[in-house]
Length: 91
Length: 133
Image (cartoon, rainbow over all chains, first blue to last red; front, top):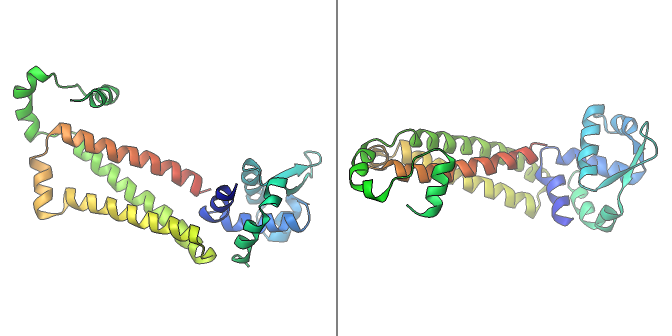
């Protein structure tokens, strides 16, 4: 998980935006629309990053398909120290 | 020709050279390396471009994150880019080596080197695919 966190969040082109997304979702679970608005990013961009984060087991969907909210997984919570180290650099 | 070279030659459609024909087959190969140098050089050129893309992304991320990990990726891409740029220089520019590669290296050697470069290109394509995301 450590290696995945580092690569997905700091090794890729979309990394910095995914860090912002992960932090927002950790603050409080939100749906894709709210995330797009709060982070001032395109809805489709948000959807893409959420898919990548889900694919890597970093966030999970809760609730129905429409307006489902996203929250961090236990896996990520378990390694939150690493995420915090990364987040500090994006502020 | 070892078993691996023979197997690879079959896959890429090149005809393995029977040992008995060696003496007569070698002479023309010396002067005509065929298509392999072109494929090798295009492949090395592609490697340079792909590594420039990776290096660009990793440099930007290093600038932002300043972590050991991003620095490692950046240094890796810079060194591998240097390796490929140097290969291109030896093949095409270096006054002594470029002449030697163009006139004295047989097809069988070019084919082997071409394969190494093409494998690296495929590897880098996958890395760019996951990194561009």
